[in-house]
Length: 417
Image (cartoon, rainbow, N blue to C red; front, side):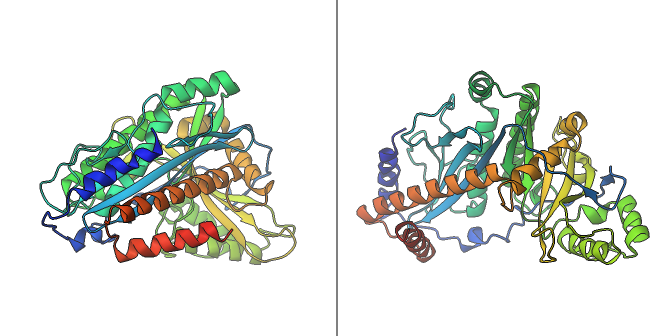
């Protein structure tokens, strides 16, 4: 796909000039649907034997990292979103970008899925879009003025990530070119999504069906990669609303006994971890030199997060806590690791040793491979944002105020370096 052919999308949208628009502000409210937030498990099972478990960082085997980035280019006539993905390895470099740049990649997709989502502001409009753009959800519903814009963003990006993870050609190439087996593929976010749409009765059915389709694809990807000896691992950075720790009665009892504090009413894992860290230092459970440790692991079953999709794997999660300095009490960094139970059975805590090794050896706050993938796909999506906005400008298609601000910000970032 030639990036220059993005002009085909712009031409279609330019054809909407003069059509009566239907501006629906409600579908632009992120919190309106309460669709995107992850559902907390009803309960969790503590698999460990101590309040916290020290982890010795190990030099990891080859780790791949897949990350996706989304950009919004909102116009007077249609909403558009761009998604990019990058597959990167600290050891082998860039494995693939999609959409492709001008490099010769060691692997490529067997098909080229859409990376642009388009929703006209006028009702009953069906655009003639090129294959790399879509006006339909993964479940086949039409993107129109009444379809939530943030849902479109999530659908296009998540679908793209799933396509990369499920591509048989990529798995075969990884095995053949790099000899990769028994290795990890890190993804930014949970192992599989458990969106609030699954339990919120007020959510429109079209969003629930779309998310089920996306989760089914991720579940298949997890199983297929395990068959090739590749374990997909989720790295979660945001858990302000998560309550995995406080849903385990066994763990809460152990914290109360060892640390003398009740964290059952912490409200979130973020608060619980901070409380546990503070009292662990106070009770001399944590001592200088401060070392990386995990809280967990915990077992989560699909039924405990309201998922009724067949073959959804149980997952094991743990919070990795990495002190900022071994001899100074200046805080810590933390992220959550999610692995399929089958992979945890096989590798045990070695998975956490590898992931923490991929973090502390490079002095980063997240696994280094994922940092590389995140940086790369964000820069690529920023470039496409600027290019598409220029095409809109040339076609005399006005952007919304928020999109103009975003373009100005990205432009300053790009040209100030």
